[in-house]
Image (cartoon, rainbow, N blue to C red; front, side):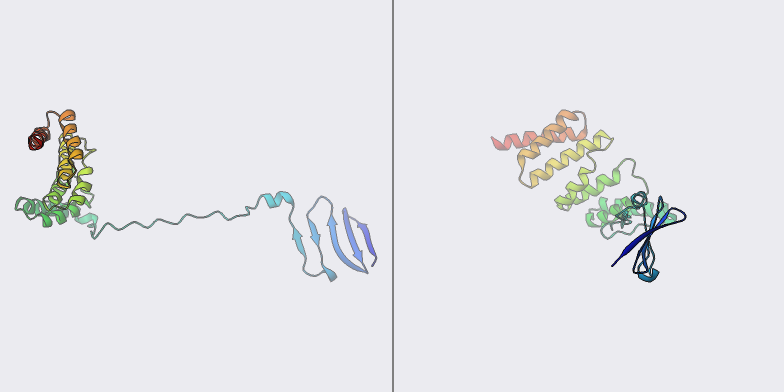
Length: 207
């Protein structure tokens, strides 16, 4: 089979075999391949054009789905002030009457609204309610939220109660560490007085 190469005008080179144009080269331009009989023309991109096209598609991050918070339903914005006030009063009344399970429900729902708890009274009462119910793991979770409180009384009391929980679980060594920390770090706090009594009582019990 004879293959013939011929030049045409416009700086083009044509490759012909048996009277059939195999392909045409355009100097300085993109190559064009023409199959037998000129069917199915395809444009071959230049190397610099290939570099402009990303080989891998850029992944689009999925929109995260908000996680549900246990069984609580957030009140609508229009209901927040009245709803929050009602929850606080309900929780406080239940707490004072020793109905701690009911108190935890009201306080949890309150804390799930955007309504403020500036003194962290509700957070403390929620943690204390769990402790009264002997739901120790939940009490630990809630008292730990008070460890970083800007109020030193809250920090001291939370540390004291975490020590009491350790005591209930039988870890006296960890309890003593926490109570000693209350005394040394917050010596004038109300919790420090109770911590001293607990340490003294434990010391007498060991004699």
